Image (cartoon, rainbow, N blue to C red; front, side):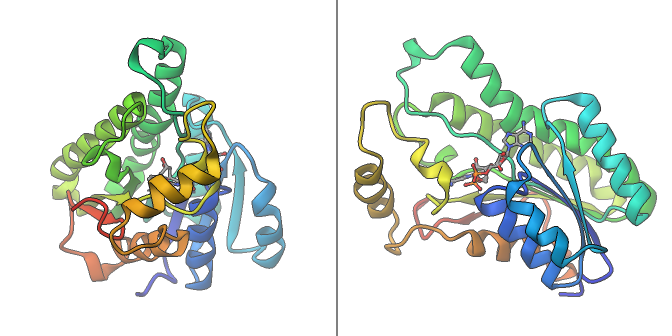
Length: 251
Ligand SMILES: NC(=O)c1ccc[n+]([C@@H]2O[C@H](COP(=O)([O-])OP(=O)(O)OC[C@H]3O[C@@H](n4cnc5c(N)ncnc54)[C@H](O)[C@@H]3O)[C@@H](O)[C@H]2O)c1
């Protein structure tokens, strides 16, 4: 895939999907800036890849924190070729009349406004290079919503719309912008969609796994494979696409 001369920023890098995305890029020789609030999962990787991995603790809802992280990446590695917006938070299924404005705004801030902030900070570097690939992790729930995930689905829908808006805006600069819709994936987040009072294990098996036509939860590796592909020149004619990696859940 020729990713060894590239520099990638990965948000949500300490999470279930994010960490595997970071690992796969490192294995391909890519230099990686890994951003997360929680760095626990990344320290071991840092000792394994001291030159190739820059670990940055940052809050993606904070404008200055995002600007600083992107600047530090450019200063350290000299270029930015890939931005993968993987960070996100779940919503416990909640009837709309019980959703607080505070919860709504927090979900929007992390799942969509953060994608605006990271894109805004990164695009000037990509424009200068006349190339770049931005990959936004949305969700198949935008096409196949589940009851009670109102704010979550709306936040991911905004991210898909932003993906398409930026794809057309940035095409003249050879910057590609695509989204991935994961289906239910086997990470810590999956349990967080469970309505309060319901059994997490039961929901995972009865609701989520059974909703996937291919019969298995999506692995972080399956998502990472798609992120790497979209980052590479193999996908050089893909922009504005929304790719389902969902075992058929979106059908
Ligand atoms: N797990 C699923 O079933 C599923 C399905 C569809 C889409 N997704 C999406 O996939 C992406 C990755 O999810 P995951 O399953 O790896 O979740 P995860 O909870 O394991 O990881 C999310 C990461 O984002 C980080 N994060 C959250 N808020 C942050 C902030 N303000 N600043 C910096 N970092 C922050 C968290 O610390 C965490 O490490 C998310 O965007 C999620 O919405 C997940």
